[in-house]
Length: 156
Length: 156
Image (cartoon, rainbow over all chains, first blue to last red; front, side, top):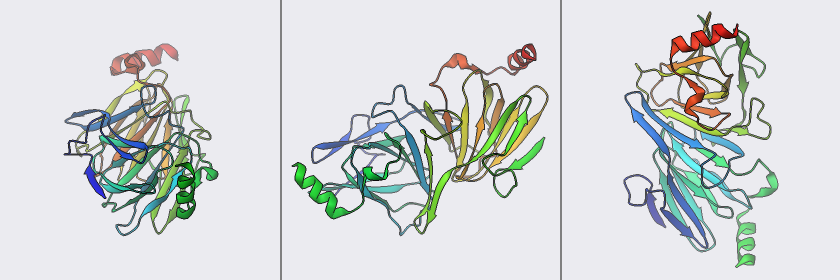
């Protein structure tokens, strides 16, 4: 397990990434403005590099001892930002696991398909905003870990 | 000034709205799931009625005594949701002003173009998520209230 924080870390730049198997999870710093009125962060789909979002969703009021996710997507690409608090994102494939602590509204991580992902340790008030490259399709989800492992082994 | 809350109010259903001049600001209840792991709210652009989002942004860490917005959009349509707290949205045209208290992750308001809009009274941890129908163009903004009033009077 490698632990990185997207804030206060050398990893927090638009080109930073962790490699999981043959896929790369990238950290992006969002366009933002800060002044006396607070902060404003922007994702303009015209210039957003990872993909053109087709769907957004957000999880909230997640109890500290609960975890969410625990699935992989066959083709859907996702972008995760923690708002108003922090949560820990666990990303894994067959061989390795990475933990990324999301703790800033200014940074997001771009997670390619076929990465087994879960989120835990939501702080009070934390909201995890997710942008997705596809509309919802249940058959894009792999929710069974054994099925995930066998699919990945079949590909390598 | 009419004060409505999108929660705990008869106005909180997908068909509720306030009329401002000849434009209608609608309240939408978002698709959502609630269980032991917390809440999940979803906006799937394929079925999202107001418009297809081209851009999102969010304001955060806004001091209680500050206000944001104070402009109108010539053609951009916006959808506002308060996450993690509450804020008050003031919507006005030449003749009337409405206050809408956003205080739930499950409801958003759809604001058509040419409504003068500002936000204030952000609670601690409140984040205002905005979906916009267009990429950013500075010339879509009317930031001068006198210019807004004269444009509106020229139309009526």
